Amino acid sequence: MTEIATTPPALSTPAAAGRRSPLYLAWRRFAANRAALGAGIVLVVIILMAVFAPLVSKTGPNDQAFLTTSLAFPSAEHWFGIDDLGRDFFTRIVYGARVSLGIGLSAALFSLLLGMPLGALAGYLGGRFDWVIMRIIELFSVVPPLLAALLLATLTRGGVWAIVLISGLFGWVNVCLLVRAQVKSFREKEFIMAARALGASPWHIVWRHLLPNSVSPVIVGFVLAIPLAMMLEASLSFLGIGVQPPTPSWGQMINVGMNFMYFYWHMAVFPTAALALTILSASLLGDGLRDALDPTLKGR
Amino acid sequence: MLSFIIRRTLSMLATFIVVSIVIFLMMHSIPGGPFDGYDMPLPDNIKARLMADLGLDKPLWEQYLRYMWGVFRLDFGVPYQSPGETVMGLIAHAWVPSLVLGGLGVLIGAPLGILLGMAAALKRNSWIDYVASTIATLGLTIPVFVISTLLILVFAVWLKWTPASGWGEPKRWILPIAAYAAVPMATYARYARSAMLDTLNKPFVTVLRAKGLSERRIVFQHVLRNSAIPMITIFLPMFVGIATGSIFVEKIFRVPGLGAYFVSSIEKRDYPLEMALMLLISALFCISYLVSDVLYALLNPRIRLGGKDT
Image 1 (spheres, rainbow over the protein chains, first blue to last red):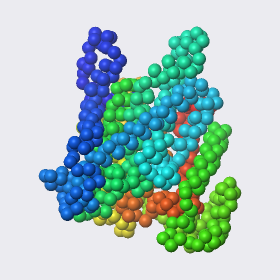
Image 2: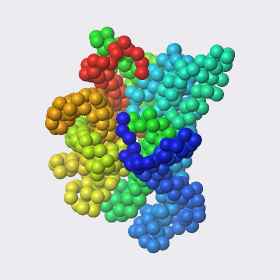
Image 3: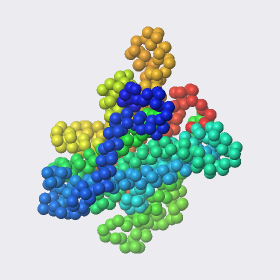
Image 4: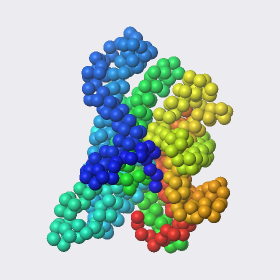
């Protein structure tokens, strides 16, 4: 189908290619994709800032330390200004990255835990089990995730872990389909037949042979689930039923910032930019990894 | 062909019924009822009376069957938040702004996206290709409320070209339409590009070129028609998907459309309205997938109608 936009010629010399490991080749393909590489670097910077948030900023995210200068515009000592409740806005944004990325990663992990075994079993067993799984996936395709998430979030009263569960619940479908397709295409290969002829149990075949061969779709599914979860979290928080204040969340900050936008632009600009930048780099990284790890899935 | 359509319809109907049961159960398992939210709590006997009047004291399965029987006769009940009208009436008038803005957004965004994708496919690795893929990535990854906020900031607050929000004179429609147009434009830019590239690499295009057909005729008469199938089949599901976006776009641009009711009906435990909206969206999704499937089969005689799952 389509190909990576920036492929420099002479990527690897044919003589050397034979001895390189697949992982190295994947890395070469990834590094050649400049957009993905840049996105990866940006994401690493954001993750480092989130992890070392207390070092990046002196005050805590909920310290109302600057009440006398509430809503001050950005300045040398407050890079992103002060918010309406007298909190340093840069600190809030940095701590918001913790929430956003934390939810993105844990939700992706959860969708992996749910989607990988189901996809592998559906692909390997086929038949009735496969049919049931596919019907369940069809159910998920008919309900818009956001509407169902609205219901579920109201049901659980929001909160970080509820959001993780909800995004996982809607993220597993992709992982499941990717793994299922891979397993299905490997099921009839000679080495699987050989294993079966030697009397290996289905469990052993799936666990030792099929899943290790599905590593790339699993990684791709995982990475692509991260931005989706982050988006869902931000959307729910924006509507006021996601992460509850005072926990800093970008979606929530955009919602508040909207009301101040006409006079205090910094209240809206910075959370919007932070969210856009993070989701964009996470998706670009995911696309890049997909193209690098599994050239057959390219430009899907 | 007919048996294919009937089979797909039945399977979609089954999906729809399961979805309606799940949504109904989820809706009713949210703690609290429609009369619990007031600052001045109602006395228990009055509350019990109201619940009995609305049939909320019946067992859930009976409430579900009653409601679905109503749906069957196109009677969706009376919304608790505005008891003066029916759910149908409320949807009928709230629908207009959503449909006008969302529809215009799609009608403007989709052709732009197709043109962009075509240009990108024909001039590969040129600046227009980069612009197209940048737009496609931005539109598909950045949430619609971020796009809307940025649009207001840039065009209403800083440049002061357009009013920021509201519903009325068409000048106020520009920004919400732009916000709606982002997703279809991005989707179509991506689909059109990959479909065109796919077709351009087919041997028959080489044959046409060898025959000496002009490039313009090749592109518009042959390549475009052959790559139209995926573009047609994604149209309806994408159009319905716009409905979810309306929750955000209408909240941000203060448009009195259907979007706000998605959230408020859940918050106020307005069961009839909530159920009606959810059923409406799922039904539209079911129908749009069905139509897409049938269209796909009609347009592409090569696909097997034997119903083999992919």
